[in-house]
Amino acid sequence: SLVNPGTLLTEAARTGRGIGAFNVIQLEHAEAFVAAAEAVGVPVILQISQNAVDYHGALRPLAAATLAVAGEASVPAVVHLDHAERAELVVEAIACGIGSVMFDASRMSYADNVAATAQVVARCHAAGVAVEAELGEIGGKDGAHAPGARTDPRQAAAFVNDTGVDSLAVAVGTSHAMTTHDAVVDLELVAALRAAVPVPLVLHGSSGLDDAGLTAVVRAGITKVNVGTRLNVAMTHAIRRVLDADPAVVDPRKYLSPARTAMTEEAAIVLRRLRSGAGE
Ligand code: G3H
Ligand code: ZN
Image 1 (cartoon, protein in one colour):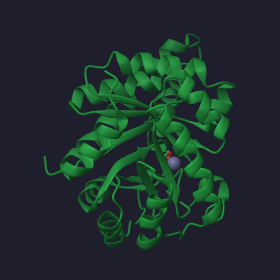
Image 2 (cartoon, rainbow, N blue to C red):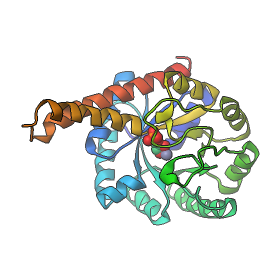
Image 3 (cartoon, rainbow, N blue to C red):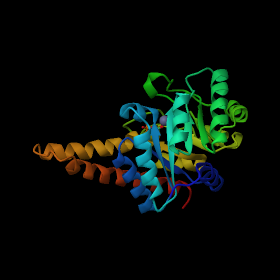
Image 4 (spheres, rainbow, N blue to C red):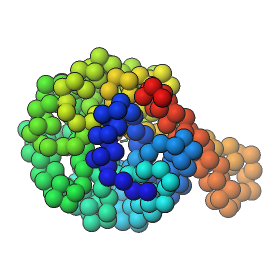
């Protein structure tokens, strides 16, 4: 069932749990991630990125489908707008019934980021919608972010105070779209940020973590763990296996069904690692 995103994250942060946040591109992604969360018995965040919206040409159809899947889940589920750089898209998300958004002004200067984010926060909070923002570029995305970027704990605390955001994405060593699992996270920095920042912390680019890394970041103080690429790798490999084995296949269900199963299994692996990070 759909739950209040703010409460889900603050409660998870309070109890040291990690919540998996997985990127939805197609209906099959949403179905797979809810199936995984139900199998493991944990909450899940289904997130739609601005990139995915632009791919479809509109937010509403994918948002409606994802909200419906989340609403029918037997575990707590949240639908989140991810990496929104256009404030109009945030407004549209609110109108669609999405309860949580990331406003990504991380390409702006610090002062512009604060001003733009504070405006989005005012608008979202008036509608009861939670806001995640990002401070300190996270490497890799569109080549616009420096790979070695790090978030300064003092600046992070000031940013949260100045903007009123409900959660904060931090740069601590991961970068987006990694297909290897060898990212090295600065766990001491995570702990310092956890101590300095009063809201739940978010890690982007978590596909780059190995099993031990997933456990370690939760232990160090990350609450929302964003994973996209790793699940698409599982999906695409499953599709390629079917198509390679039988060139006569034309029914999409013949390859999307194993693709959905592969995403379910991969998401479940991640959710189990996050749970072990919480010491459960
Ligand atoms: O916002 C989405 C995540 O940061 C996904 O990153 O595709 O590198 O796992 P990833
Ligand atoms: Zn991201």
